[in-house]
Amino acid sequence: MNARFGVTRKTALGITALVAVAVSAVPGSASAVTDGDRGGSDHWGLITRNTIGSPVAALRNGPFGSFGVTGPSARPPYGTGSLGIEVANNSTSLAPPSEQVSFGNEVDFYGDPVLGLKQVGFHVFQTGENISYGGPGNMPNIRFEINPNLTAAPATTYSSMVWNPDPSPVTNRWSPYLDATTTGTWYLSGNAGTVTGCKLATQCTFQQLKTALNDGGPAPTISTAAVGKGRDYMWIGAVDGLRINRTIYNFEADHVKTRRTS
Image 1 (tube, rainbow, N blue to C red):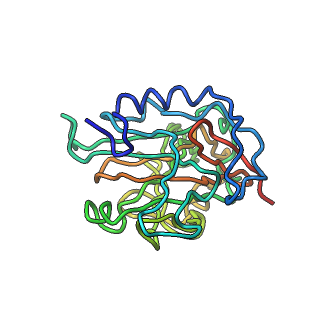
Image 2: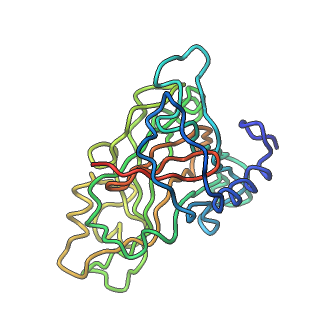
Image 3: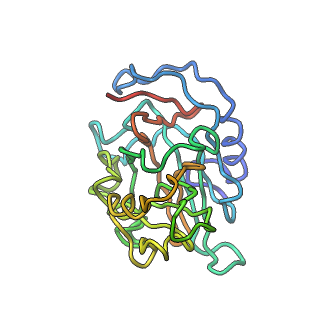
């Protein structure tokens, strides 16, 4: 099956594996803010155990557009590249049959305090087609695998902490920064969601989630951080400028670069 980015899914997944070990020497575009880029991380890539089906999460150039769109929203917010994502809604033999993809980092955030998260968010390239597939809320998300360390559930040592964004304010172009600490909703998977009440069916604000996790026991810790999509609707788009606290992760075609913010 040909990917919408002009390469096959098999090829795109191969590229994803290769770019994780590339060292970037290409400066950013003159029309983008790149003077803050300071190296990068080799630890970003497809999290295979959290990926279902044959989706695509590949570092790429662009997107630039859509056609007729000009100005800052016609290009990635940092540099010239982004993380391209493709998932299908009906392509596996599982129930549900939809795909899931997770592009993240299983090394650099391990052991960090969940309650230390102050800034989280990203920019997204949303299309009108994606809205037709699953409505305005058909968006990628940010996921942290965590040890919740809940006093009320000491045996629960794993949960996914997921941010579901509000609908993008624009389509067929790059969005402004979407702040996960003030917009959208969060939930915890599994027993942690049941105990805290911040579960898929009754999602919480960022502050409500942190309050629920701060229940007097050992501090909850992060295991991994990722951008993902699924399992629900088909989605083809891109993400850039992932922010976690003071670091912005600039997804470029050859590498994940980092820049510090004030």
